Image: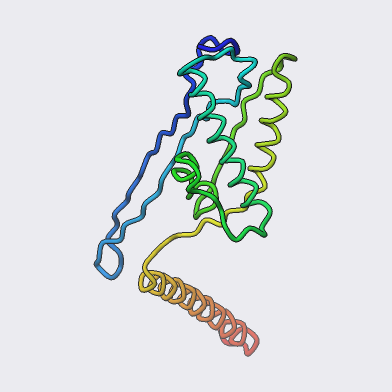
Length: 186
């Protein structure tokens, strides 16, 4: 409990679901696809002067603010495009969310804000945070064995060639019927 939020848990929550799918491919081998879903609820940044926290609660608030600060550093480094170093290891939060923030994934962020004048600073900071996060550009792609990728590409090429062959045979049949019709056969 803090003066700003009577029911505050004063913590971040990360719930991760890992999904794996095993499929027997055309090469008669098992191929595994895997995906992760991180559902994250971040504790809001609260000013110590507003929370009235003391002791352990004050330390929790400081730790939360530190992790949010480090998350902001990671977001800024990812967005500016000039940074050679992304400080994921500065906090457990950013390390856990590394693949969601700047990795091979699709990410959705929902920012919750309040309309109260009393919280206008926190609301504005949340909106700035979300604005920075939405500028992160991830390009999700399937991670697979190069042999599997080549096999999949060959299968697509074979299917494309089959379709072309069928279309050519169909158009040749039409042309021969037209020629027969023009020559008075039929």
